[in-house]
Length: 120
Figure 1 (cartoon, rainbow, N blue to C red):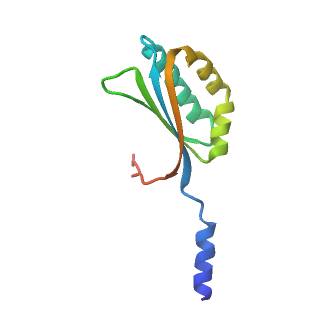
Figure 2: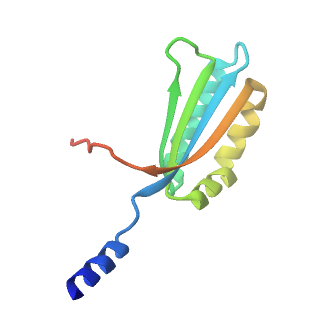
Figure 3: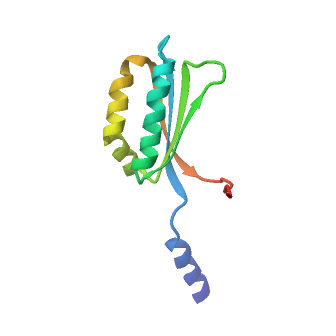
């Protein structure tokens, strides 16, 4: 019984592997793709580089519809995402892209990661 209790405490002491994910789907205005892609790429780079709680920020572009962009972002927790929303680079991106976006859909998820590690 003592062994089971100590295993339970050890398991409870393990950090959670869950994260907080945001997905964003953008439908862009006609003719806005080139400018939007440049701005979103810079926002993604700065988010990963400057925000300790931003673990991943992928920009996915539809293979045949350049007007459709999907973001997949992983944060340590909801507070890290809130910090992202308050960051200067996000506020600038949001302001500079408002007129470029026809529709924007945001969803939040918890994450249980199951990824292979890349060596090298």
